[in-house]
Length: 87
Image (cartoon, rainbow, N blue to C red; front, side):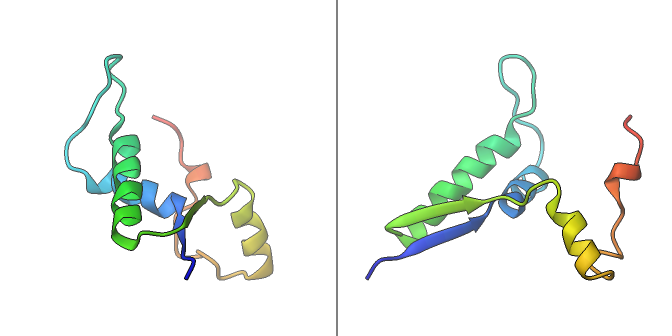
């Protein structure tokens, strides 16, 4: 039986970025813990489920806007980070 593993890329990346305590930096001093965690998470799930195929999907930047247009209450309780000024 063929098995396909479908991974919500944004969810996994978010969980790895905020779920890994501390920081992991590259030689340039850039924080790379999300990348390390993401790849480690992919490997973990592939080893756990042994799929024949794996697909990672990400929402587009415009997907939330179309969902909000279709359903007003979609994420209505969340902060719109586009309105938050950069530090």
